[in-house]
Image (cartoon, rainbow, N blue to C red):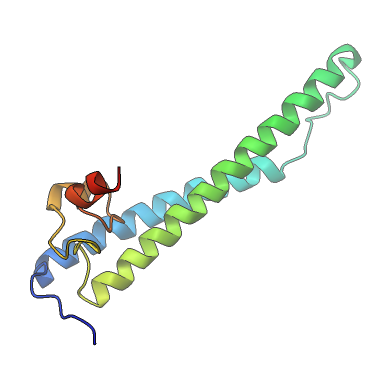
Length: 127
């Protein structure tokens, strides 16, 4: 039997959080596209034959750069997924409720980390 949330944010607060989250999703999606284009772009700008001495260094650097951008893209995709899950919690009116303590997560924390599902108290208990 599911326990009903007794304490929750008002519809007005939830609407405010929703706007913040939607803005973050838009920015994160733009950033994700940049990461993806950076690691998918194998253009060398036509400089292949201008510096053959440094070609080995360039290739190593290019591989590392692609790996770093790939990792950034993966993290960004997770961030977007977490934000979208937060939107679902807003629709369900369970947003901002700590999944461990059942208490409301402070508004200041949610404004900074809108996808948070743990209060500071619960986060500290994990350590």
